[in-house]
Image 1: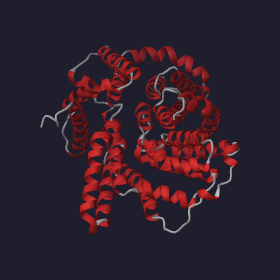
Image 2 (image 1 turned 60 degrees about the vertical axis):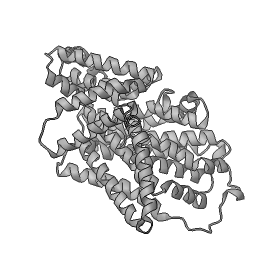
Image 3 (image 1 turned 90 degrees about the horizontal axis):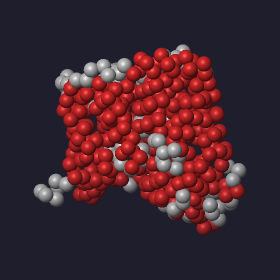
Image 4 (image 1 turned 135 degrees about the vertical axis):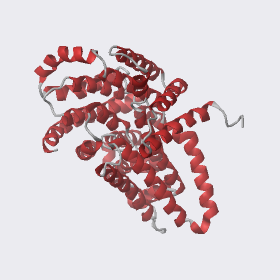
Length: 468
């Protein structure tokens, strides 16, 4: 019993408590604000030590500033509770999305992807395209866990095909992954932007998906003329096709993403819940159905299936929850700030001062937004923090610019910041796995693409804002 009651299990138990309360609140008409905020505050206190130093400072500053801002209009227990739990739904969503690791592990889909690549994908250009597509696809449901999976299962195949495998892997994975944050249900950024700007995920999805596709094409075009992309595959890299690849496994991955998106839009259309809660419910339901289908597929070897399922579930408890809730304290802090800022007297004064200044920029403000997000990310401020702050300030101005265009501009800025900042999580993970410097991954290998991406996608975003 004592072995089970430890800090990790207590913290993960609190996180799952937030998940249960969130799901119950969708079914029962009961106000869980007080209980939800108490658990969220406990998550902040216990989990803040797990954050990096910069995130710890940012979390505390946002939390304290949020409480102070809230006090300017009269603070109550209920308003404080609403502020503390205001972004808990993002944490719940990310924890639920990590459940996809269970069917992916049980179904051994990693092996199917690697085998398919060895048998059908030859040559640097084809490999680059395949790695980007797999990374982009998996990032939509597995979030940050995608990076380790892709580089571990495809790393050897990449090394066999390309001499400069470090740059090849770094650019393909970072670009495909960060472009996935534009639209993916497993990404926190798009939901934070949706919360800050008031533009629903359902309205953001199609424009952001199109921007992501444009980005993928641009990423390939800009890299295809590199010397290592012109290497021809050697005979040793072409594996004899003596065994059929399990194409059904690859199709299952695609169908899982399609099912997630379809259910999400159905739940939104029938107004079962908000955009974020609809995606959460869709994710949970997709995982449950996927596991049931896998159990029927392995019905002849039920003991092995149960053993794999138990192992995957234990891995989820120890690693999946921790990965999904890695920034939970930060979201409590920034949620408190966002709610406090929105309900403070400061917002009125700030609006009167900054509105004339921002109004002079007109459409140029859309260009300045991503530039500001990138600049502050280079000095160590996480894009999530800058996006929340900049977005909230600009939306308070009530400018004539389309809220959708502002949301798209923030999203484009966050993608560029994730790629360019040496402090970004994706860059740090890729650099660690490939044993290179973070600045090499971010600035040296990706700065030209980021610049071109911001120019091209801002033009497309402007067009899309008129269409949608």
